[in-house]
Length: 251
Image (cartoon, rainbow, N blue to C red; front, side, top):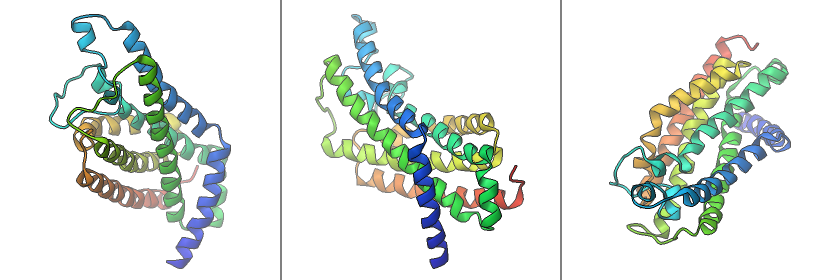
């Protein structure tokens, strides 16, 4: 165990350095920040009266989520909110993993290190941090975009504690999408398009569950459920990723 932690610490140091010297995470964070500003401002500017106005955003918090028990429609507010970031997280993970195989870094690394488990664990943890940065950037952008658009910040059916629990739940759920991305990245290796398509397909299957698991009126129970689910997926799919790396060619 001590040897594994020592190797993991070394891998984390390298991966964090690589991530924060690459433009990828900054681009993703910038997109995450700009997205809610553009959505909230543009939809408010184009909003009309009657039915058109009813379909748009009526408060800032709709860009973060919905209250539990609400209508599960396919309107603007249910589609164009923070949950879109899970697909961007998949892109972040797949690009980060594919770059290792395309550059030859993974092959050189595994020539020195026979075990792949520290590689999988490091990639999962580092990209989870990147995903967290994206969600925080989106939240900040939503607050700024809501203020620019003149939307109300009033809370109905939830409070500040629910918003915090909602954000924590969504962030912990990124571990599920991160582990899926790492798994498909190890399967596809240099084929970035394949890992992204596979991650999007898996994400679509889980997408409708996100509003139910992490509503705006979330509690500590939601946070614990999402943390436990993310941890289970990370460990389970991480083990599968480790097996794939041990059983398949690295090129």
